[in-house]
Length: 384
Image (cartoon, rainbow, N blue to C red; front, side):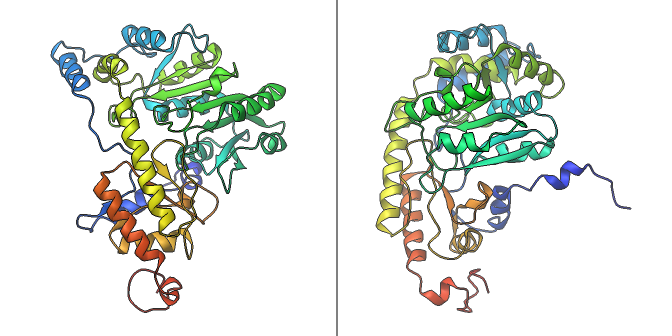
């Protein structure tokens, strides 16, 4: 007997990243340039703070909005940048996105998201019956404020800005964000600014949309900057009414971020992670220069730890399947986009892994034409 499931199940797509993991399950020692997780560990002092929290029996629920100690530490860290008197500790930035969508969007409402986008921007909208409307940033990943304004309708409720971006690595300049803020002011829209990669801005100083536009929900966390991906701690700062609504929904979803991790995050705030940003800037240069020398069409990312090259032949799925057949894990671009022309590389990996990945990509770029079209009969997953 078939189970009757909610319509939102079929409306929501299975993660393409998970599909890559499934395809790669049988690979031995793969060259993994797929996962968006730092290759360094959580700093020792943060790990020690978590252990101390366990031993001191800080194992209970905290307040829904986060422990008083952590909220005070975060407010001091922000220094009143956004005029906040309060903030909400979330279950990472992804938890903050869920709460923000629940608080802002009714079924049928529209939310503007960039294309390419982080996968949750689209799927969360579909899950709750809202409509994602894409502002196209191809081919250079830059945002056009006039293009954004042309997409606004009487159903538009919010816009998502991701800078530095997953998957493209683009970092928006202060001037670009100022132009966007003028459009948002004219239409009185809420902005959701995903700033999880704020540590990783390499060529220009990081600027938050929250510095320029009051009606901005700033979402930040510690998963990427401190390698705390499994700890699930983030925070939201912004309009008080929106934060109160998000706190209400957190009561009935996440309850609170993990208490032990909240206690350790107080130590994380004090920990200087700039050396890792410097190392990742060098990794960025290595992967970019390697791809250019191999003949790939690619934009140089300004931040995060991703790069988004154009596939040299075929579409994104066929090319990535060939990469996997050659022991290289990357992600098809259509996981992050309505187009099938690019693929995502994460260079959050060792230099040796990056070098091995470049060599494989160079070899695949240089394959003969019959191999690219899938007529070679070689069993390489190229299309036969």
